[in-house]
Image (cartoon, rainbow over all chains, first blue to last red; front, side, top):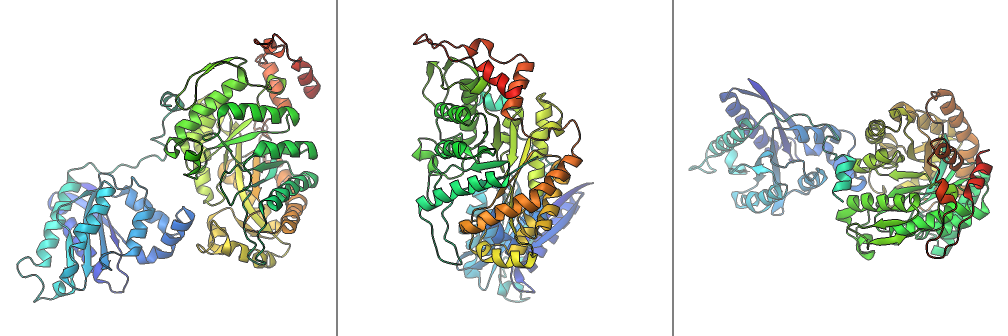
Length: 206
Length: 391
């Protein structure tokens, strides 16, 4: 048995939040699929609402403060990331994008990522494909093929998508993230200055 | 331990009066501030270098040259000298000239500059910032240390048989600091040469400065310049004082709330918690800054930003007086009492560097009577001048 850490980022604003609900379901599915592969996974969930002020402050000052510090450390050390946002005005929410903006530009390189989004109707579902997926492609994350959109109707026992119901999509997405995470070595802590070239290398490169 | 002030030279509207100084008023205020700091007994005055409004100090050696003639004791320095967009040949010439006319009462701090458009205005590219800093500084040192330089690099036109004049005072170049907030490559560079490293983390948590300084100290030792705790370290700071701490907060808050860098972001209280900014009584400043060495080890230079956010000149001069009278004497005494004997109290002065070079036998004896290979004339015998300084 080896341990992995899954970090869940939820940009839902209300309490309770359907975005958080979807994020929790995706995390449960991923943990279950990892367990089936003999891997224990810990889940760390972050509601961006709780660090909203710190995110704006970092945008203005350039450094993280308060509770945002451990959040950025968790993201940097995660074996897999689940990112879920409500769809606002045809895209990810401003708070969600502001959080992505304060991440180090290399923080998610090659990292397995599962995307999710919520909205009032299924007509917003392609925001995952035209907004979320390109954003994480830019960050060079390894985004799994299934991204899960949950409309209000999807939470009903009847209604929603009968042919391809939400629980099935969640299971498939969780399996895909679990496979990517299981395929990799657990992320090892990296020393802050490990990557700094020696001065001889700096001189040689100039 | 040295305590000084540095200025960015920003033109900022005073939010309490609406007054905006013009460039002339601001430049003159900077001169007054430096002269006042000298009279008050502070150790260092450093000016920034900028080539874009709202900043006025584009020509640091002109300003510092004037100050060399109109101040007595204060060390004149920079915060920072742009090693990326300046021609290293001009830097070698200008700062050797400043060294000579200030009689060694100067040093300088290299920085890269973080304003993207300034680079292309001077024919460079900000993405080459680190390589520029590495190559240009390597050339600058050669121009000071070697009489005749043949050189070829990536960023500047080649040199054949070039001699930078005036030669450094007593054959010993100025002491150099390297300033960086985020780039460990620059800490590595400072460590490699055994130069000073100043972390101006006035907008950053002290833990961040402690990490970078720790890295610099470790690499300083790695390159054989001494023990890690003997490395020459400086720190930036930011304070506003009043004998009543409530009054300090009340007076400073309108400036904080509108300040170009942190205004409209974190609250004053949050910013004081997260960064070295201290707004309060002189004793609060003593407590906060006296504790810095617990985080970064004993260090040699503490610099404060005093004239920013539109604070009027009169207020800045009062702040300098409070700093010099009520804060620095205590901090200096405490630092000296806590300092281990093997750790340098101050950055090396010119006289100490000349003495060290003589002891090490690296004083360029032959270069003292250097012959200009074009005119055949010789320079004055600088060893006598060094003797006069160090005797």
